[in-house]
Length: 113
Length: 112
Image (cartoon, rainbow over all chains, first blue to last red; front, side, top):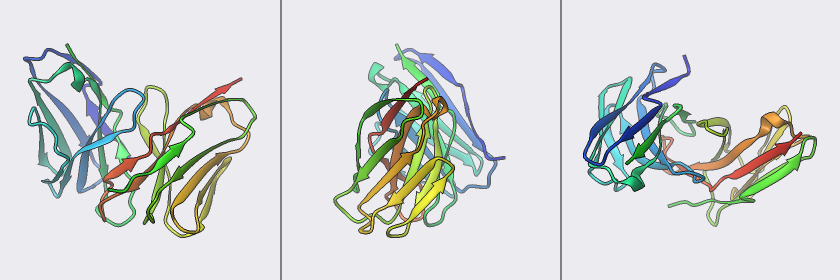
């Protein structure tokens, strides 16, 4: 199984809502990532989890709260988002080793209204 | 951090024509990866280049890493409509992880 599964595929939320994005992989990868991709732009790294611990936070606003409950799951909790946070949120996973590729999920397309 | 400049931003070709996208860095890169993202899709890993002067081929796709490890290219021979998408080069900026910094991408359109 070489898939990274993200749910939901689409999400519309109001600025006062709380929602969560979910990501799952069963490749035994111990590094998991959240990337954000705006339209016609490249993905930008948000967070990295290594062995279920947060290892990199790319100065992401606190209205985004990641969580890694176990080695297969990664969540992104959303609260009080702004319309400019509308984007494609991509989860990825990889082995922890030199020169390793990332496996991306299909993404959650988020619209904040 | 490491940055890669990618050109062109956009290219529209007729089916059967060749296509090339280029990535350049002002610093020496430890490796470079290439991803393809179809319209409405997600990035899919194509290849990784590590060695100076490395050339790798996948069917009609040829990937090169410069001798100085500061530039890379992806060349598609005889494009097909299935080649449509955005091609990104990317550099892993943290050793041991896929913490990728992407180039801006080249969007390829292929007309039948």
